[in-house]
Length: 123
Image (cartoon, rainbow, N blue to C red):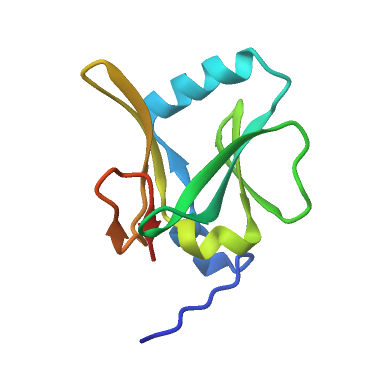
């Protein structure tokens, strides 16, 4: 077993910790933000599911002091609580349509296992 540590403020981690969004996800988020007072979206992680963790998404009207901000577009900010940066660094947020269903997907390079239904992951 190995232990990985990183300093979220270190310059050499800027690219590897970047959380990004696809164009499809940005279009979807813009529509949602247009109907709210929020200025961005917070991506957190909660213990849950058969694989251990699930993503927790919420609108942000006021960022928290422990949030790290990723400005993915001029009008969209993604906030990640510092305690979860190691779990989501390098993640790309996507929005896909499969048949009649549309869903937000997280392409997380740190996820070692995913549950069969796609609701949870482990690192």
